[in-house]
Length: 636
Image (cartoon, rainbow, N blue to C red; front, side):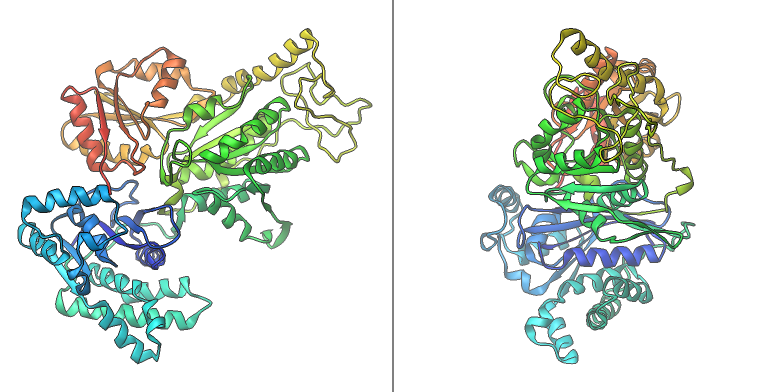
C-alpha cells in the first residue's frame, strides 16, 4: 500500500478533465485523504493539451507537487507523448488502445519544440514515433505497467445499456479515467457515488450515467489488473475538510471580511474569484439576512479600479481583482487612490509576462512593479500569501490594513495558488478581527477630510451629512486643489508618514516567518507559492543530513527589515539561497534595498510551471556543490 501517490490525468482542453479531477478530489477527501493538485492548460478554449497533477497522502495534508509520478491516466495519445517520461519505474499508464496507431506527425496540436525533443529521444532508443512503439519501449525498459482499455467499446456498451445515442455517450469518456484511477487506487465505490451526487446534485440522470461507466471500468481494472496502487487507509484526524482553489478561498475570505463591492474585468486567473463571490446572492448570519455583495463586471480594468475607488469612498469595503496586464491599466487609478488616501484592496494574481505572456501559467515576476507602480510617491501596503490558509487570513487583513492606514493594499498571489486545489481544514473564525480604522460622525461645520494635524485623518463617507472634495491634483485639507509649496510639503509628508506608522505598528512576526531548526546551516529565502515546496524540501534535506531553514516573506511594504537582517546575519552568505519564480530574484533585491545584505545564491524558475520538490532539492544540492545560480526547467 502507498502512503503517498503522485498521479497525472491528461487530455484535451474541454474534454471533461476538470470535472474528472473534481470527482476524484471529492472522493479522496470523503475518504479523509490529503490532496493537492495543480491544473495546467493552454490559453485556448478547447482542444490543446491540459492536465491535472495530484499529490495524495494518507498521512498529511500535502503542500507541494513532485516528480516522478506513479500513474499517468490518458484521455488521448498526446497525454502519453507529453508525460510518459514522468512515470517512475514500475509506474502505471492507463490509455486507449485506439491511440496506439497515433504518431508524433499526426498530432498537430503539439508544439514543434516538444516534437523535436521527442524525435531526438525516440531516435536514440529506436522508437518509430508511434504510441504503439513508445508504450512497448517503456514497458520493456522501464517496467511500466500498461493498462490498455478500449474506450469506444466501453462507452458503446454503456450507451446500449442506457439507450444513449453515440454522440451522447461520447460525452462520458472522461468518466473512464475516474473508473480506472478509482480501481487502481482501490477507492471505495460509496466515495465515488457521493462525489457524483455532489457534482451533479441537480441532474440525477447524469449521476446514474456516469456511475455506470465508472463502475464498468472499475470492475475491468479489478478483474484484469487489481489495485496495484492501493492507498493505505488515511490516518488524518480532520473531521471536516474543505476542497478549495486559491480563487475560492480568497472569495470566501472577502465575504467573511465584509466586502460589499467587488469589480473586475475578465482575465485569467483572477476572474474565477468574482464568479464565486457573485454566486452568493444573499448573505446571512445566524439566519439573519445582512445584504449582498455587488459584483460588477466593467468594460475594462480602468473602470474596475475607479468604480472600486468610488465604492470605497462611500464607506463600504471595496476590492478589485486582476492579473498583470489588468494591473498595468489600473496604475493611474492606483495613484489617484494614493493621492486621496482611499482604503482600496487590489487582489493581484501574477501570471507569466510581459505583455500577454503566458496567460494561463504562473509567475512571481511582478513584485517590483507592484511596490513601485504609478508615478510619484505614496504609501501602499503590499502583502503576499504562500498557501490557501494564509490567503484566507491575509485577504481579511488586507481590508483591515487598508481602512486603518487609509491607503491602497495590494494582495499578491500567483496563478499557482489560484488554480491549485487542496483539502483544507476549516479556518477558525474566532481568530478574525475586523477593524475599520478612524471614522467620524461628529458634527463639524467645515469637515477637513485631509486634516493635517495627523497622518491618519478621520474618515467620513460620500453620502453622509458632511461635504468633502476629491481630486487627482494636490489639495488642501478640504480637498480643494492647492499648489502652494508649503501645503505640498505638508500634505506629501502626511501621506508618506502613514507607511512609517504602519511599519511601527504591524508586528514583524506577522510580516515574515522562520521555519526550521535554529541551528540550521542552510537558509532558503522565498515568498508566495514557494512556501509549500520549500517546507517539504526541508524534510528531505534533513534526511540527507543537511540542516535547512526557510525564511518566508509575507509583507514587502512596509518591509520587515530588522528581523530579516537579524536572521540573515546568522548564516554564512554562501549558504543563503533565494528561491523564486522569476528571473531577477526580485525578493532578494527588495532585501538588499532594505537591509543592505546581498543574497548571492539563487534558484529561479520562470517557465510558467511551479517549482517541484524533486528539482528544488536537486537545486539546493547544486548550490552547495558550488554553483551560484540554478535555473529550474522541469515540467511539460
